[in-house]
Image 1 (tube, one colour):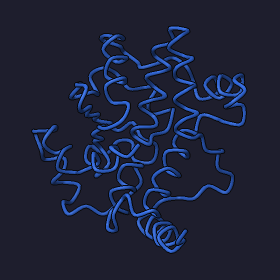
Image 2: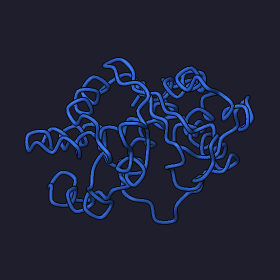
Image 3: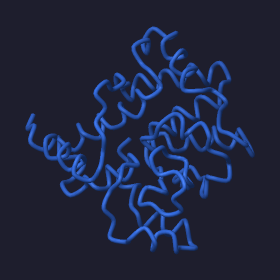
Length: 216
C-alpha cells in the first residue's frame, strides 16, 4: 500500500486544525459495529442503535449525537438524512455558522437509520445513554470489548483514511473529510456567509459532506 496519501492526509488535517489525541480510543470496524447494532435492535434498544449508526455515518462524537433532538434533523428520507448540529459539536459551541454545521448522510445504512429515527418519533434527546454507559455496553460484548464511546468516530475516520489511500476517495477530498469530522476546515464561503443562509437544506448540500458519508 502506498502510504504517501496517509501522510498527506494527516498533514493536511493538522494544518487545518485537527487535534491528534495522544491516547486515542481503539477503532471499531464497520462490520463489527453492524453486528453490535443488530444486537441492539434485537433487544429493542432503537435509540442506542440509531445513535451508533448516526455516530458512524456522520463521523461524530457520541456526546454530540446523543443530545440531538428531532428538530436537529432537517431531512429524513431513506436516501438522505440532513443534520443541523446547531452548536452541539465540542470545540465550536456558540457559533451560529461553521463549515461543519451540517452533515448530509447518504449511502449504506441510511435506509436503516431512517427507519430507526422514524420509529423514535419526536424525540427530545436521541438517547439518554451517556458516553460512559455506551463504553460499558461495548465492553460487555465479546467482539467489541476493546471499544469505547469514541471508538466509533475513530473507526469511521480509519475507514475513510483507508479508502483515501486506496484511491476510492479521490485526491482533493481532505478538507471534506475534515469537515465531516467536524474539525476546523477551509471553506470557500466564510462563516458569516454560511450563517446568512436561510435555506439550510441547500447549504447542507452545497457543503458536500454527502460525498464523504456515502463511503461510511
